[in-house]
Image (cartoon, rainbow, N blue to C red; front, side):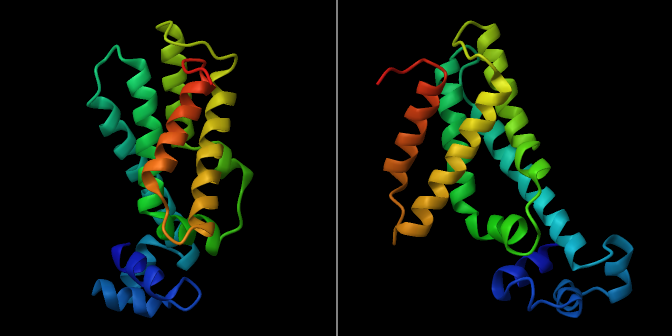
Length: 181
């Protein structure tokens, strides 16, 4: 998978062949087909791995925060999600946007959104905030964060990470009613 990722980043998915992937991985073509049925199949596996690593980074960042500091946990979630996405935006675009059709299920039912929904639910149970519907709020916040990063990345020559991260954090806190305008 690492060889495929390197090749996809270097020359794009359409231009990359199975032979280039197997050569870069130093494995036989037959070995490739033991694990993957096609280039699209390895692309899907890379998407799964991307999501898992992204979520692991978010969980690790939150685990370093005090157990009862819900404000910091939510702000950290926003910051870790923002940073992980922006740091890997080229790979993200290759595995989720470039060569595969977007699926509504993949955009809305994913482990990262599920984790945020669980965090919002736990914060409600701890009376740290009140949201009408944790799942709806998680989808809204995640999608909004994703969109503002995309917008900044496509329009700015150099993304002002500090400004964008601070704005995203404030919007997350406002979204759960902890921060007022």
